Length: 247
Ligand code: ADE
Image (cartoon, rainbow, N blue to C red; front, side):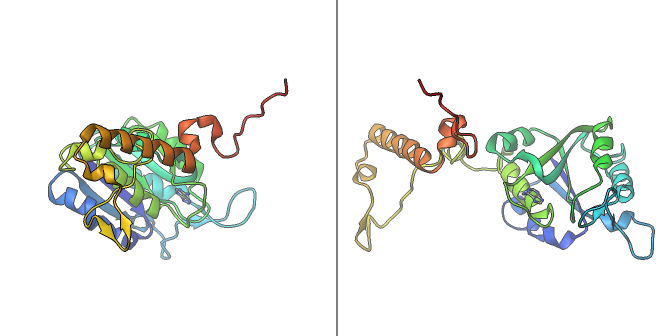
């Protein structure tokens, strides 16, 4: 998989060389390229933003540097086939395990990390019309506002790269994680069996694999019901409580 990042803060993405994505690159599973958007400006101040049409607070990223950067990075000379353009935005589709799984099937991801009040909408609309773009996905990390898309790009990268075939040593450990089965993960314990008067639940020491599996499932369901009832019953999502008509 080829991963490109367009940003005005390339240093923000230095952690890509560490940890999980770094390991995936060393093993040849991914190829990562970070680009400074200002390399596609032509004025002395390397300007990337301007005031919004229609007025309002803040600045908007001008379309020209983005357009030229996408022309260069998506063009036929760059390998990997049609790209999925990922645009981090608080107005995007929420990042979920299902979305990470979908992105893990793509051959190229290009992250367009905006700053300020966002990128001129025409950049996104134009990218959607390009034959070298498979899809443009706007992705939100959650219902809060960050200063830019870089942290979200790192989060998406980590969620996706660890799903690539050959990345995780043990595929079973992937399947048991939070969200893979639509539930939060059960609590986990390791040695010693007693620590500061806290015991490991005895069933885990029993050697009875069926009882252990049943206990873990029950814990996962209980945790999910307590902490994230919306995962069990989507209609319970915050702000979407259904009004039950009086009989
Ligand atoms: N950029 C600013 N806020 C964001 C968020 N919540 N998710 C993704 N990108 C963002």
